[in-house]
Image (cartoon, rainbow, N blue to C red; front, side):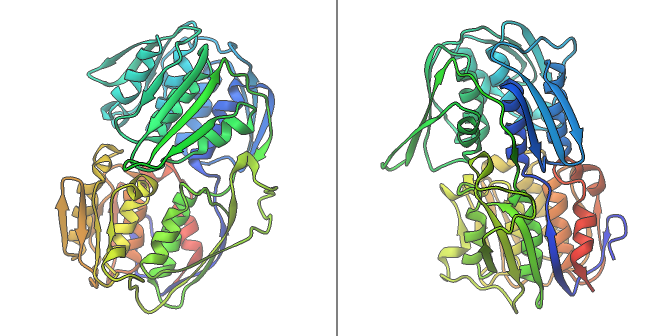
Length: 452
């Protein structure tokens, strides 16, 4: 069994489960409910520490927050209703919280300070500072990192901003700032789509986002919002987090004889690419209509959802030999959170797996490229490290080892799955302390479907 962070190999994965609400959707639902006029009830809200940080910050800014079980009630302040916090807003480890709130606070007539833990204070923030200053806010930082001191203004200036690096967080920051501008704010992304939860969520709360696509070499997309924008309270159920589901799906796909069903998972097209990628690598993954176990009705928050079934086979082989073994280009933005787990899976895929164009992984909670390479090598895998990714040889016989989560929740969870398919016991250093960032129940839920 799983004893603390010591993990024994598994025979198979078997069972049926539901997961906490999607982290990305939960952040956005809470922020927009706080900006709306009226009371919104958000059911199946994420249990992660990151999303709790967002709620705490919104409470400090004047929104009324109530939590009962998995439901969160948010009484919004309406346009211009936020108030200054008397102390810095602590975003913990959450890059989503700090970058999205920066967009909100840029349009307020008071000064705010956004900070976080050591990891967050080392992550790049110039990518949001630049567009917000173009819109008229004044943002002070420590060499481009948090703490961020934001002196807002209302109204902000509408801009047409082309992101130098495709990022859903930057796009969201600018669109949220656009709610406080006079006129149309545009965000241009190139190199393939990033996740579109913010656009969907703004429409759910009553402010439509116009999207246009240009077929060119860079596949550019433009997102436009008209300000000032006024949001209106609305209830909804948040689907299960597909980025959490992927760890269970991968474990089931890797272990012969496994049968696993995960109910009510979010299937946003900009996130569900991981399912197509898994199928392309030979995983037996199917999606069915959701049964409503979570109380989902239609597409709450304009987000599609469904039930995911995974069967374990006798080995993984790409459906298109060679082509499916390389993840690169525009695909990377749609798989960024799942790449450490896919690297683990790649050790068991015929022909291995190569991940390129993923230098963004080096500026996450930790350097996820370096951490993944080190842990897989410790388990006996053949791994090559690149500046922008890694390559793993397939058919590895992983062995139990001492692994290091490096304070990163996704490294901890990917390492746990690797340990299930290894020979002998593994120990993951620091795993218990960091999984709470996204999925506090991860190890207990995993234990509930493991058979030995």
